Image (cartoon, rainbow, N blue to C red):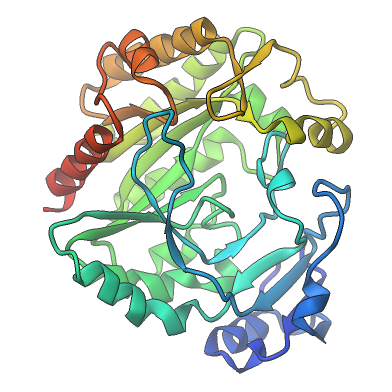
Length: 366
């Protein structure tokens, strides 16, 4: 049995046990109580953000929606053109700012065990458009690696993507769960990315996540074993001595990873749906991330004032460029104006950013 202290029980949706992925997961969790439930019992009525998100419960189910969908960006800001591969929802980490607290009315750590059955269909969709680069990731509605010792998605997804010359798979994580990746023989078309912040934000606001140092040590292990790396400074958070804090993270990056092996580095500022504010206050009463002044953005989310965002991007962006000139720096969900003032250039629109990132894929993987 794999040791996963935060998981205390497993619930299996009726019909899901027949999938091979369910069998593999249950074999890895022998000794835990297993309960079979009907699909209707998986849905909790009422407002999101209740205190008990059942992060100690793993639920195995068949997902009935589209497994590959565009990132839910907005036309009012420049979007990267990312595609989301749905492997599950919710996360065992408990970051104070996490949008998932307000996003779903379904609790527990949910794993979509029928993904394996849909890979052929997804492959046909990718193959149908050979001139298009599909930048695909699993880290939008869950952490890509937090449950990897249990799910073993690398064993299933890596060989699939290795055969797709117009697609890459990006795994985004705050964890150091890389053993399953390192034991795989596959490296081509795979990007392993880490979400980074200042050490103080990581320790105060990212409950359950390893320290920045541990994340970067895991990144170094992956890089030494031939994986391409990515990094995401999102959300950047204003806090006391924030410049010094982010410089400390950059110093650790310099110590542990080779910048020449980084395909891209993104930055984004703290933003949240208005509904999330009350949830954060209830679930994380000691947090200070809401202490600053926020204004509604064009997408309806609350954001820092534009000059504050520009200042943060300008500072960290310049430090990253001094470290290495080829980090593929880009902004997440910002306007052309903020791009120009924060980074000194802009792709102009979503299509321009997509082409910029696609070129990074070509340059890295061919």
